[in-house]
Amino acid sequence: MGGNSPCASCKLLRRRCAKDCIFAPYFPSDDPHKFAIVHKVFGASNVSKMLQELPLQQRADAVSSLVYEANARIRDPVYGCVGAISYLQNQVSQLQTQLAVAQAEIVCIQMQQEPIMVEANPQMVLGQADDDDQAFLLQNQCFNFANNNASSSAYVNIHESLKRESIFGDIVS
Image 1 (spheres, rainbow, N blue to C red):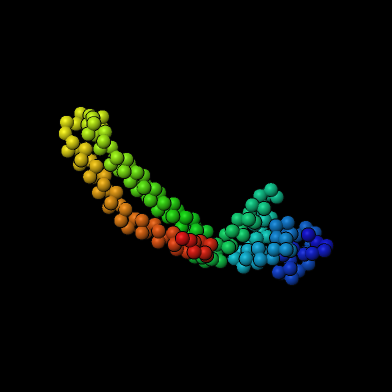
Image 2 (tube, rainbow, N blue to C red):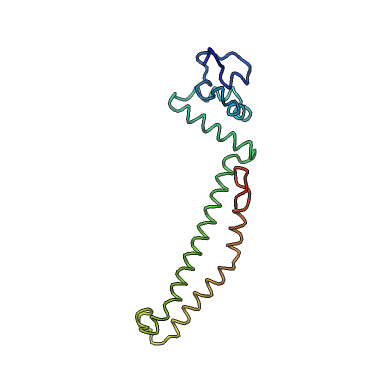
């Protein structure tokens, strides 16, 4: 910004901040850590080149992306934000599996509560069923499905994966 206080970039690089400093609008002097991380990962020269190639209206978003990617690279030098995205996609997949199992259990429980209707009018539940054996088999299959899935490793795996360290370094439970 020139004048009174130099931007975080110029402070870190120990140079005079010119009025037309490309870093000044995006790396204010009150947040030096932001530029330090970006500089450590990408280098000041590369960031300067990237910003100069972009139109003014896209530079703030680019800086925000650079800061996010730099933070991700500091946490995970190999995968960066791709590792974070992969982790979150796996978590979504596991939660979708857990939701499908829970929905199946709800259906089974609802079917277990229908024996009153089967005894009163078996044709209502099973169409043209003549005996209660089909209703009994259907309910037992549902009950076995619910019991097998309730103790399955799917719940254990999902719960354990949620206890793992999150992409931001804190423990998720």
